[in-house]
Image (cartoon, rainbow, N blue to C red; front, top):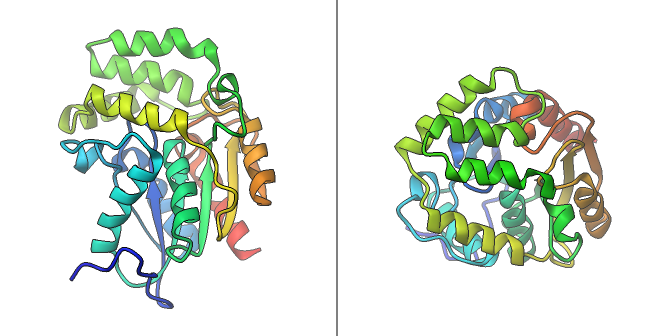
Length: 259
């Protein structure tokens, strides 16, 4: 039986974390991170794909963050297990996490926002370093999926080893579950229009990579100040912090939870 859309999660029981990936990404792009987080927290960790990506790649993506929230939430409510749920989102997933927590604060006890931003707290050139535009264009023009992924990894990752191997793996994901150009454009449109809510209604942690060209650390600083939340900054990581230093991110979440 499907849970009503205003239902609070069952109280007590197992601690669970729901992970939300970002622009043009799906659950498999988390790589080893879910296992690292589960081990650090002693919790159950899993992901769900945003509409138009991964398992949902045949479906149309809404053009607003709230639309993405409601689509994703309806599927989560339908399938969720009992437990004490928390939420972690990166990039576009972080925007979805913010809006979800604000709109439905009883769904989660905690929320972690990683390398994300909001249009009312940062200028467009702070939300994305314009210096990477040539690389974005090069990636868009490439018909070779592995080369395309390698170009993108060149500006999203700063520390991960063997990016050629990662690119080959991620190219396999793109071939297996291709992301439509329409989906990418609709995701971008939703992201550019997103504004941070006044408050989240749940405990929050903001995390940033100091070398992120897609969401400058100032975006995280302003989000933390806006939500009166603690801020953790990795000194060397880029945008894909779970790929660059998953153990650090998992330990940072554990330290905050237990603090």
